[in-house]
Length: 103
Ligand SMILES: [Zn+2]
Image (cartoon, rainbow, N blue to C red; front, side, top):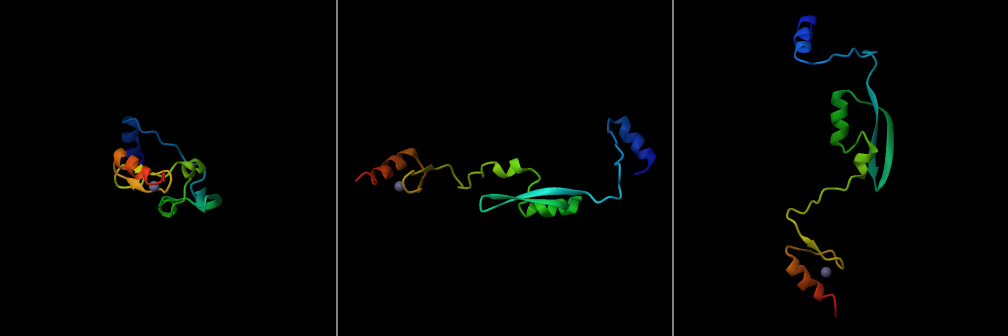
């Protein structure tokens, strides 16, 4: 990007900051979760390509991201039996199913 283009973008409100050391490779600490244990992987390359590659592999840049509850993967909302884990499609079905455990 040349100075003229930067000037135009600045006029539209974009802000440019000079990286203090452009030649230095960007590196970052990634986190991944393995059997419920968070492992820290410091000093990994974090240029846009590497970053994308690590994120695709399930690495995160933030420990907090790993602690977020996993999204509910069942395709439709269901009611889960607390006794055996079976998923019923309606509350009525669940209450009927629950009765089978009360013998
Ligand atoms: Zn059950």
